[in-house]
Length: 253
Image (cartoon, rainbow, N blue to C red; front, side):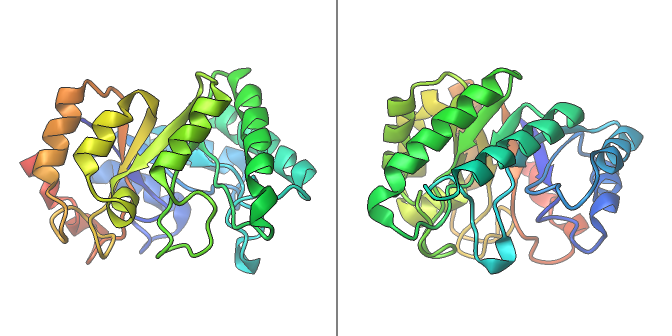
């Protein structure tokens, strides 16, 4: 499997731009991150090029995180701001060679009108990203970690994908979130395999590296290999100790 280390959650002992070097030193060729927008595109380009890395995934700008925004897609009053975030995401992705972008849904103020706004915005973003050969990802996130988050059910997420019906709009299947929301990790993965565009992993309940919690990752990895999945497996966990020490489990996969 091609593991992609998330430098927004791992190597946080170091400044962001130094984390790419740390990833390479730890043996990784592929990296992903959440929000690269505090840095100029050229700075990230240089950091990636220096280590000959491939950046596999970024998120769209989520709005004002410090003020509670967790995405803009559900807010019918901020459509123009959402569209600007799509353009910014495309600018970064095309410059950095990124082929997948995750769009956070957000925490709706008016839940009864959130679905209509969300579907329209995801449809818009998917069509825009398709012009650049980029896949748009949506991800159900568990309500324990992110209370009020709109997309907090795997089955609802897939129903929305069916409704939008764009080939470049896919599911980001994070085993950590699915375990906290639903369990049945393997059955759900197999049921919705055709909709999955990216995988992420972390153990539960602490969201640390595999082997620190309740998920039986040996079975998970065997199932992923047998499935024929050809994408990346993102390591979006918080190391329990030093980042460099959190990869020992990989030698057992």
